[in-house]
Amino acid sequence: MKLPEGLAGVIVDQTRISSTKNEILTYAGYPITELKDVPYEEIVFLLWNLRLPTESELVSFRRELVSQMKLPAETVRLMERIAREPQHPMSILRTTVSLLGTTNDNEHDEPPRILAKMLTAVAAIIRIRNDQPIKRSKPDFGVVENFIYLFSGKRPTAEQVKMLNTVMVLHADHEFNASAFTARVVASTQSDYYSCLTTAVCSLKGPLHGGANEQVFKMLETIKQTGQDPLEYVERQLESGQKIMGFGHRVYKHGDPRAAILREIARKISYETGNEAYFEMEEQIRDFMFEKTHLHPNVDYYTAVIYHCFNLDRDTFTTMFAACRTAGWLAHIMEQREEGCLIRPSSEYIGETNRHYHADKEAH
Ligand code: CMC
Image 1 (cartoon, rainbow, N blue to C red):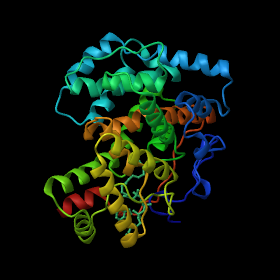
Image 2 (cartoon, rainbow, N blue to C red):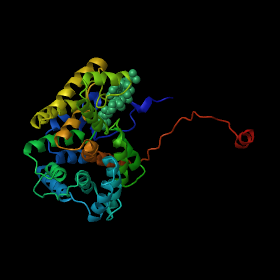
Image 3 (cartoon, helix red, strand yellow):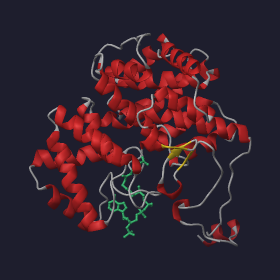
Image 4 (cartoon, rainbow, N blue to C red):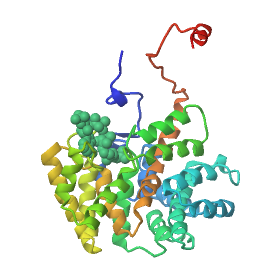
């Protein structure tokens, strides 16, 4: 029996973490529309424990995460060497995650420490690549406030924290997406957390998954720099069989619920930072794409402009996605470990049969 291409629509396992059933995204049963302004650390607690924390649990969980937002000196030393190489930041992150699992006996780290380190590592990669000194987290800041401080070097405004918090919440998990599934496959072999996360980063890097956000902004920049008409550009791309990055989704065929929320943030922040030309271009392209293809924008379409408005370089956008998604990856790794079953499907062999080595060698 031939399965659908790319396993589209195939239910490969059960999960209690998140769902996209009926195109409604829920985390442990709560709709994302009700969670968008909840503090990121509370969402992480929910994804890992499948229940909301009490007030005191939230305070101590936040304290634990913030206290771990630091990297071993040895890791930083090695990161400073690799992050300066002319490599893509996602490649640097991939190596960094692997490195985190090999320095200072970190292989035995537990999820809160791992998440805190991942956020810190992404911020450090952004700073090192800009030749800026690495910042130390502030014990009196929350997780999102610290994260922004660590990559920007400036104390964010309450409005910036609110906006990035929503971005982080919306990216925290997304059931069996390619990177979470990859992490689960590795976890099913009883491998360690950092090995699972390294493969998740590798999977997220591709432009059909998390790498799309960088490609969206590349398109907007190209249109702006060359002075082309955005709709003519998109039409030409479509006519030549190219996909328009940031559109379409394997699960959401009637619109990505995250995109609807992010669109409003992109609108607000782009006007506040003088980047409204990018947002307006996105609006034009969105309408045109719907008219031409009936495709809707996905989560990566609007984060491209949002991250630009946070003064981030285009090639670091997917590392931001990785930082936010680490919470979900860890939830899936834990759930898979609890299941304790090896993921090892079978394939249908469709190649040559009945060949004989010696006979074929003689015939050559
Ligand atoms: N631009 C133009 N055409 C598209 C696009 C697009 N972005 N997406 C899908 N299509 C077309 C596709 O060519 C196909 O046409 P046809 O039936 O004539 O061959 C049809 O729509 C169905 O698409 P599909 O690729 O078979 O659908 P899928 O479920 O396999 O693809 C997708 C989902 C996300 C891979 C695809 O929509 C895509 O490549 N989008 C662009 C990349 C992107 O934005 N990725 C981010 C995904 S959301 C967040 C994340 O995972 O990180």
